[in-house]
Image (cartoon, rainbow, N blue to C red; front, side):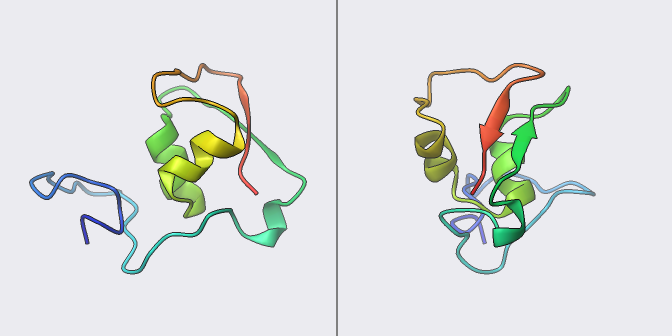
Length: 80
């Protein structure tokens, strides 16, 4: 479960967390093919990857970002 959700094995889940029971995809569903995600207050790359079921490393790669880069409210991200 921790591996599929890119979480530490000791991380504690809380109510409302999105959890995947199988490996996430490299890109979002085709319904989001031409849609950009606009970063909202409180969102992180991790929470966005969970929302769309995308592996975190591919979300960074799609948007030409490194893990050291921060996203800010209003940034537009490709998810497909």
